[in-house]
Image (cartoon, rainbow, N blue to C red):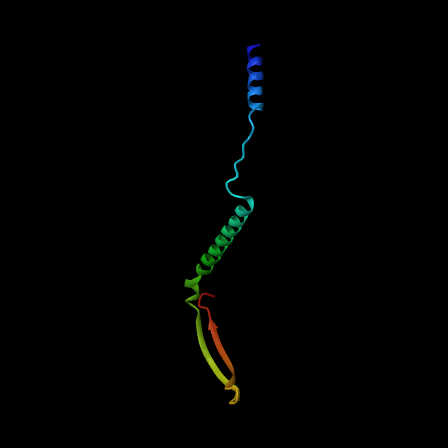
Length: 92
């Protein structure tokens, strides 16, 4: 009997408590801040991933095979060239 009375008192006590929500920052502002934070993390991860293979790229050899002049335009001061490179990767 005593336990039933204490449960009823607790139910009455907790049913009278109402949640009070204090909004310090608007939801729109939080969404915008979270979007920019996510974009910053994405850009940082892309930069770190791009820099992770730099030591392998330094081992690649690029040799100039030849340069051929196709057309010279003296009026516009332009020239069309055909450039050939030989790219070798010693790791493959």
